[in-house]
Length: 200
Image 1 (cartoon, one colour):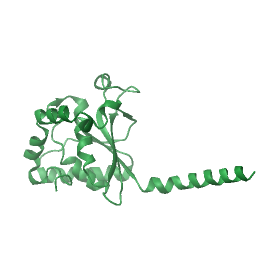
Image 2 (cartoon, rainbow, N blue to C red):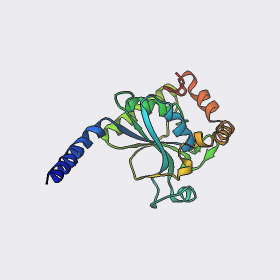
Image 3 (tube, rainbow, N blue to C red):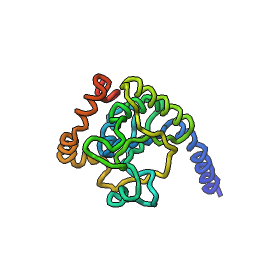
């Protein structure tokens, strides 16, 4: 009986602790072209605790790397962060300054819808913050920002070999990123603001 009461108490404490833990973390979902690169960039941001590469927005469940383009998914990254260290607004500012948000045909050498940029807002507050960040980016660039702000859809984690690819396959990843011209293009577009909160 005592064991049962103790078990019930532990379960009750565990359940009541979940909301407190969830309030201490935030989640952002960004599509910024190749998810390897987005994951690599945001893993460098202080306050980010986890990044997961995946697919979002398509018309079929359980997309794979082989099917996501035909199914209409974007490559995206789900970012878990500590709001006490980095705000959602700061993540948005970093996101826009690590991509070319004026390109509606893809990102850098990766072309097609699957590689276009997007912010997936999890709630109204995120949607409002994303819209403000998009307008601010337009003002800074003096160009139209085509990155859409969309309601969050089901996020499907990519295959294990895609996770932390930039670390697990560093040589291949480094060659790809340089050959794709991502960093040079971002720096040419954003100037001193490129890679905000990463290279500062």
